[in-house]
Length: 222
Image 1 (spheres, rainbow, N blue to C red):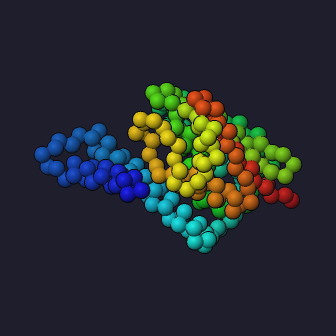
Image 2 (image 1 turned 30 degrees about the vertical axis):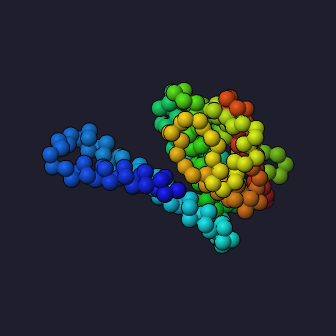
């Protein structure tokens, strides 16, 4: 954890040193690059700290949800849109199929937005090296629930690892890849939030071909 927290701190420190270095010529393009680096690494640092705090909160059993009525379709589309540039940068695409008719849910907006964010972020993070990543995001209904799924064509997860991925601090081994950051809190957090909203999460994976996460939640009825 300490290593993961130090990485964005180091990046921010380096960027600030560059700003203060009077011997370094600073073009508008360089200033923009430095500013973007500070902004993105600050977001990453906040995200990591928040995740640790959230899991600590669940451990103490004092998580407090501020539930409100939201539209899952709208929530999914909004979060997916924030990842469009990142996916297209790899040469891939995000395909959305918003098919749920009954999509009203009662959830904590911040926590549930984080759930969707984590699943899409993981799908991109565990893409095949030097390959485009494609995502398929879908919503649909049965008689009592609304479903949301994120499917990718990434590296996939071995069968023996599937049962462990929701455990806190467990990370799937990715060989010699060093571009996958994190310390195994994301999916444990996701499962906690989904379960505490009386929902369910399932995972299917074909190693070497991709992974699919599916969440079900009771929808609000008139």
